[in-house]
Length: 123
Image (tube, rainbow, N blue to C red; front, top):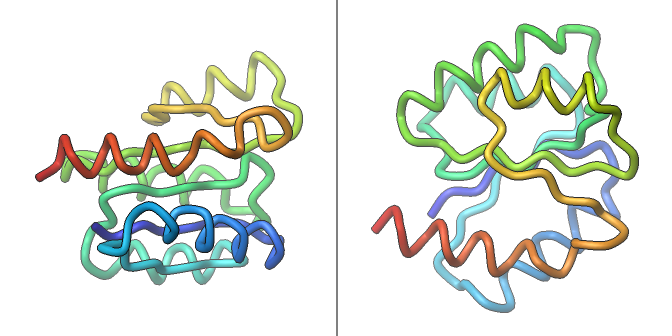
């Protein structure tokens, strides 16, 4: 399973890799810390799952979401990570195909279970 992590915080990215890797050794990670790196990843083989910070850096927000939406035609699951999210922002992400919303303070530990569940479904 290929998991793309679009997160500006190296600490959070490292923790996600460690946490997911503890329960699933079959995961290949690709990480982006900015919009340009994320666009580059999306030009390659389709990730099975994208974990994306709701405040992911880059002014081309709509471009990135547009590419993710195109990728979703290939069965990519989009998980939005947030500290705080407004209802309008949440609706925008839903419109662009977000499947899950994870509160980084309260639900961080649930991410490996979601990844494992998605891995089982996609097999």
